Amino acid sequence: MSDDSREYHKPVRRPAELFDRLFAGDDPAEVSRVAHSTAHALISRVREAPDVDVVERLVAFTDRNGIDDIAELWSRSPARTLPGALWRLYLLQLMIHDDPQTAALLYDRGRIEIASPDPVVAGAPTPAGPDELVALIDTILRGVFQGDFAVALDRAAAFCRVQAAGATHLADDYEATEPQRASTLTTRALRLATYAGDLAGCATLWRRQSLD
Image 1 (cartoon, rainbow, N blue to C red):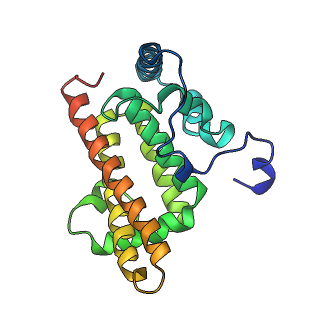
Image 2 (image 1 turned 90 degrees about the vertical axis):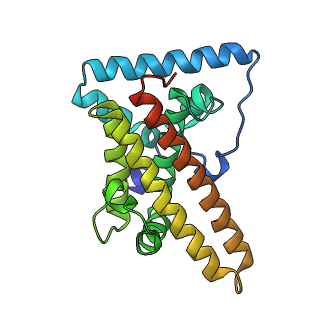
């Protein structure tokens, strides 16, 4: 997206500021009810009769509107629930869109270092530059609304694991010379690894028809 087009959109908070943010609510039970009902309504309606234009608007939602509305709905949901999974997927997408260069750096390093099939599961080309990673995360999110939902979650989890591996190894590189940068990368690696576990857990629950 060009700089000219971005200036007409709502300001987007940087993703790193949103990982641990809590949004106020007068009644936690009502917040939870709304989160679950909106998530289930969205998924069921779109997946029952997927429309290309609707799906593309959902994939592009945070680029056009920022993430505040989604955060207000779903950010406080438990990780292994449907709204919790959707929140993490959108936040992951925004992280990649916000800084695709760093994402590509982490992914490339992780792809080299990780001893698992996760790069294949995630589905990025080799090599994967910034544009390819933006396209990949959009494709993964698109799969949430059409196709196999559990596969989309598994791909997102694999993507997070590759990124986490890259962040961990880069943190090791910087530990002696730039400890603050190393600490930031270590924190990012931990968050991505946590997201990977949560998204994989959601995929398992969805296959069991138990993702509430």
